Amino acid sequence: MGGSLNANHLMFLGYGALWTIGLSLIGLLGGGIAGFIVALCRISPSRIVRLLSAGYVQLIQGTPLLVIMFLTYFGLPALGVTVSPLMAAGASLTIFVSAYLGEIWRGCFESVPKPQWEAAEGLALSRSQRMMKVILPQAIRIATPPTVGFMVQIIKNTSLASVVGFVELARSGQIINNSLFEPFLIYTIIAVIYFALCYPLSRFSHRLEMRGGPARIELEAA
Amino acid sequence: MHKITRTDAASSVVGLSDVHKSFGALKVLNGVSFEVNRGEVLVLIGRSGSGKSTALRCIDRFETIDSGEIVVCGHRVSDPKLDLRALRQDVGIVFQSYNLFPHLTIEENITLAPCSVKGISKAQAKEQARRVLAQVGLEDKLHQYPEQLSGGQQQRAAIARSLAMQPKVMLFDEVTSALDPELTGEVLKVIEALAADGMTMVMVTHEMGFAKGIANRVVFMHHGKVHETGPAAILTSPATPELAQFVGAGL
Ligand SMILES: Nc1ncnc2c1ncn2[C@@H]1O[C@H](COP(=O)(O)OP(=O)(O)O)[C@@H](O)[C@H]1O
Ligand SMILES: [Mg+2]
Image 1 (cartoon, rainbow over the protein chains, first blue to last red):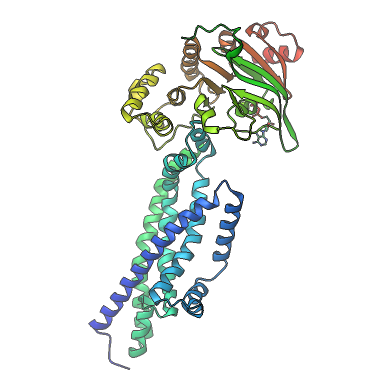
Image 2: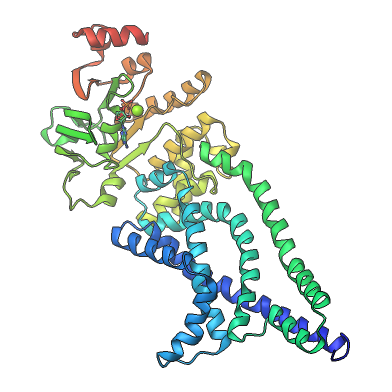
């Protein structure tokens, strides 16, 4: 009832969309680094490290992202640590992404054929040399399509950051709707923007998979 | 350089004594002993499942043994405090599936370990890569990727990669079994040349004709034991009915 959609509203939405992208990048970067460590721990020669990291993954994958957001935003202040909405959202996404990417990447490491690991061992390479020079380059090739695909999940999940007061795309739509009360129009626009962000990534991931497919089969046969 | 007499007591390169190894309830090695001296070629033969690959893998500590002792180039392989990387610098191993690294060129495949493990310079490593590739007749494939090579060429490149580490002993596990018959010869020729050069080798093979020509000693494995052993001549005049049946079936 408060007027009609104008350029200011659209700019506000655009601003929200930028924060969605920003938060996604934070999640991807933070979660990527942490997820890489999780993946390495999951295939560690040490049993205790493997068990602990498996427990971490189970715990995070068994907890809704919403609850992780609540815990970091409302739980930490109760312990005397104040966090901004951006910090809470960024940290929550990092934790969430680390568990999923950690698991995806563990699978990619393990799908490098065992004879490749043994050939590297037989050449007296150290564990880190084997990982960096033999396994990782092959695992990255395998990991690229599912990782790009998972970025779609990250983008969609940033919308949950609105619960801690972080103004990203979904939240900015909500705010505008509170004044305009045009839910169908506004949430359609929001949906279109999410689609515009996610669809290219899905397509890209799919294309990578098509291209990577035959090469991967060859790799496994060798 | 390789004029060491076979009777030299210190010339043992690989020694297994009373080696036992099980996978769960399956007893695969049941008291295996044999010795390989410097410059010797020992050929392991036997039916599929008789434990040949396992014996070979134990030498390079890809499997740990339950009891007995293995000494390789002075390394006590069964010692829990073994320096694994030192052992593997002395031992080259080539598998049936060539296992070249697909993301690296042939040259990079070959220079990786010498540069990373031995710390020699890139230039030196490349020089050496050229030399070992010439040794296996592939000097023109330096900058190709493994997938651009035929199976026989890939296997020769894998042998060259091992040689670049200048091992004291080479282990070959059915290195021609994945190859078409017309590609087998080129790989066997490379191994023959290595033997003529004095390389100490332990090899598993089903090529009986080749084994006869190259073996200083033959070990026939049967049910996880050394059932019969002796010079290459035992392939033509076996003492046990099991070996007789095996070579009869193999010819
Ligand atoms: N890692 C393993 N786990 C369980 N069983 C194995 C393993 N490796 C080999 N075996 C079994 O041990 C036996 C001997 O195998 P192997 O040494 O490969 O024989 P060969 O090379 O003479 O054909 C076979 O029955 C095989 O199935
Ligand atoms: Mg075998």
